[in-house]
Every structure is written in structure tokens, then in C-alpha cells.
Length: 111
View 1: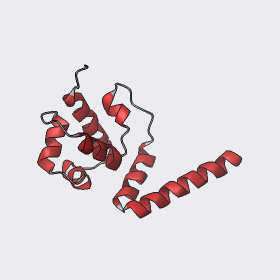
View 2: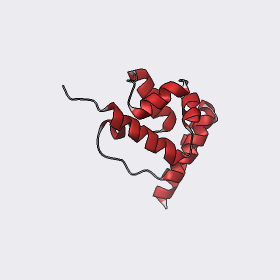
View 3: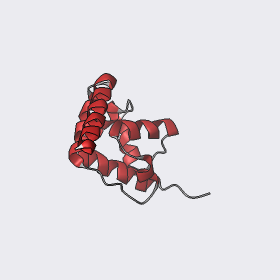
View 4: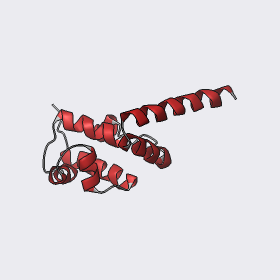
């Protein structure tokens, strides 16, 4: 069984949060966890449940592979911030953004 480096995972989560311009408190609220617990996750001093891990990945638009492996997928910070804002506006708004992005991708592909 491989060792899970919670400190490294926490540092990657912290990096993503800082890139998004959000505070620990904002991310904690977005993920429905306490700011104290979220801070412990970033420092790697508390283990999070799989449910919390998936919520953080989903709400912060982080690829789970990025947190669990040593490679960072190419991510455009502008697109990331737009998607994050859409997620904050609610599930309906988020789905609308995804529909528009998919439609634009299809149109661009046909040009």
C-alpha cells in the first residue's frame, strides 16, 4: 500500500485556492466545511474523507489526479475563474455555462 502524503495534497489544494484568488474561508464555505478544518486540510494535519475530497475537487474544479499524482494538467486560469464563478452562482448557472462552452467548441471546430 502506498503512502498518501496529505501535506502534499494540502499544498496542491492551497495552490489552486491561491490561483483562484479565494480565501480559506471562502473555499470552506463553498465546500460546506469549517474554515478551521479546511485550514488543517491545506496544512496536511487532518485527513479528509473521500466525500470531502470529492467535494473540494468538484467545487474548486480540481482534477483528482492532480492532487493524487505529481503532474499538473494544463489549466487556463481565466477559464478556471469563469467556471468557479459559474459554480458559485448555482447548479443551473453552471450547467448553462457548460452548454455554452460545448456549443462554442463545436462551432469553432467547424470553422
